[in-house]
Image 1 (cartoon, rainbow, N blue to C red):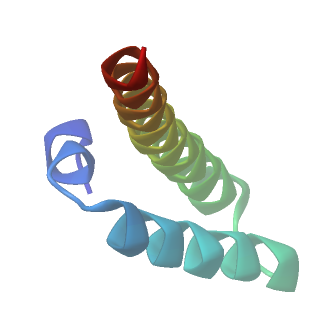
Image 2 (image 1 turned 180 degrees about the vertical axis):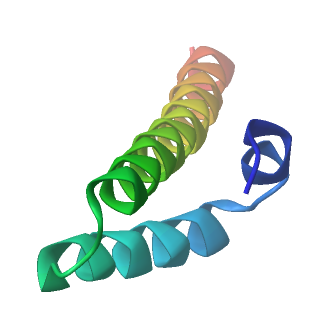
Length: 72
């Protein structure tokens, strides 16, 4: 999965893919190169998930700030 493909995923899809990737790494038995590729994929998925969460937090903060301003 390329970076472009990862960036097209929604949060839940990326999270589920990250969980699957971590489980495969934890199971072991992979060749070093395969493990490294999975690790890199996991890092990209984790970063994407964090970006999605940061964006959601920013939207929530903005909505709460706007609500607070409207009440004043």
